[in-house]
Length: 145
Length: 486
Image (tube, rainbow over the protein chains, first blue to last red):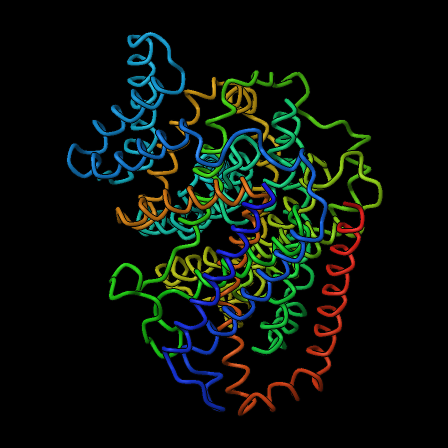
């Protein structure tokens, strides 16, 4: 865990450095550039690099406690599958419309996470989609995709 | 007189009730609700329109705390600080009691804000006008120093805040209109909406984190105790008063709003409350009372510059100015001089709205609390669906939904590695304000030198600099102490 935290801190630091470089490319640095569009992002990027160094310093010099880490891996299989379901939900929303896409997402989502009989899952998906539509579409008049 | 007012009183009650439920749903903002009301009420009597809008305003600000406590999704930006201790309380089975405390604290804060509006409106508005861009810049930097109060390590909090500042810098340059990190995308030119980020980081991030632990036993909610005991309420009264004063003061600063007020009050509570029953961040009632008192007190504060100078204190009061204009009224000093009855009427509506909140805020709590008891396998997809529709409702753009899901994954990764997502949201909210005021201050000081001279010679700036240094030292000391303890 400590190793992956160091990697995470390093990635944040790298991102900040790239951000700073990108900001400096917007406007070349000069003595009057403090009010230029690139100056503030460059300062923030620099601050990000410093903070990432502080985090790395903390990671290296603070004793790691086992209780600090969750008892499952970051890329846990169920999490990845659920992220996949979410990723599929957005294009489905555009192609099939919000109602049908939501019904499918809740059906597969609940089915995957709860693993109950498919009929119970379908009824739950129907009821929840209906309630959500009732609240958002009818009551609040939100325009659905 | 009173029979004539009965319809308006009813409108206030309806507004509060509707506001609570609008505010509780992530993505449906109070600003959006009041904007819709302008179109709906433009043919109404001015008093009736204002009564309904005031009700929605008060109810909506409070309503944001419900989803913050129950689902860890702040219904409104001003409820971000409520999640820190509200959600841990729900995880302990005390969601109903937590909502009870937020209701009473909100009403108390609202009443203090009202009192300040009524008694000190001219003085507070004059004080708010004294704030220069340099002072706003320092005030927002002080806001950034709150990251240490949001739980987790100070270094990780600051890094998350920096990430928020970076994301906040994406889009058109606020002064010149030049694109920054937009990659020629029209969507990114408009910048990243912090509500979208907030829904993703808190809502989807939490849902993803719950996926691997969904089989853990569900915590039964104790709904037998909703109304907080009087003895305890009296104990939290000084804290509520302190937070309300902070809330009304910050609310009176144009552009500051309830979110900064709530975070500042939370941080102050963390510093001033000695030996809380439960540590902050683990379900301390003090951590609920402080932000909830402050964000509702900020309503009274935000009305001060609106009524006395015609300057909106927050986005909702900006909509109020529009509503007054539709009814042929112009907010500002002339309104106070020529139509004092309108000022009194608004104060009365605010008072009534807070009174109704006390009763209506305690309704439906059992039903809401039971939501947390739902099997996680059902609750997780529903959180995603609500978050998706909430983010879509903001602008009606599917890209907002994609961003929400992206922020959700980021929130999950951050939480996994022990980064709290609150500082990121704080950075996103404060970033644009910091930048604009920094650059304005540099321009008004004719360069960096003039800006620094202004910072150390103006009394108000000097006070803020001293407070900022004090906060910085405290944060560093806290970090060192935490490292030693580990």
